[in-house]
Image 1 (cartoon, one colour):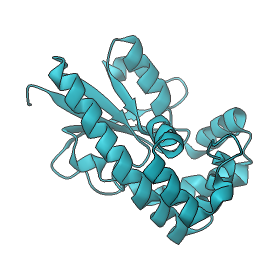
Image 2 (cartoon, one colour):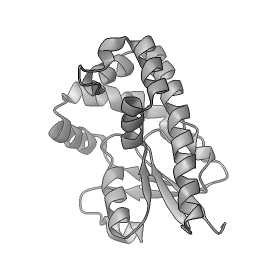
Image 3 (cartoon, rainbow, N blue to C red):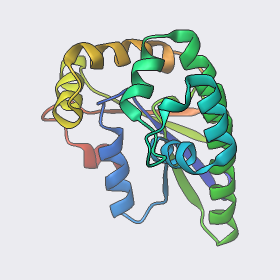
Image 4 (cartoon, rainbow, N blue to C red):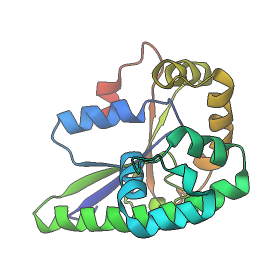
Length: 193
């Protein structure tokens, strides 16, 4: 194990990786949330905004210059080619931001940072981390969680789950992988410890 340690935290939509991230933050750990980072970059990085507008159309942003997340979700989760194009644009910008954040933490004497991403492998971030934690949960539990928090229909959630199906299958070779199984009745804290 190196003196400084970058840990990838992943799992499909609704699996509970954000809950694990919150617990880690409460314990004083640094966690880079790639979803939040991507949203911030898609709204504030001018080069990325221009590229996304050119690809998806200017209506992908509201009059207030905010990303229309529902519209973006409809575009990328119904069209594999569009998702790949958007992902290429966003992933490279997020990877750069993760590297800059991790560098700043190390320069300040930090020894560890977690990178939370549902698409750790396909984004290329799995290659940059020293260890991977995968959070899993049964599909029906995931669907009910996402419907309750987002207002998406079960069909929309299942479509997103289906789009992420191949994400956990490869890319962890040579890495220490830890599975955190987020099932009802199974305590998370002992697994995180």
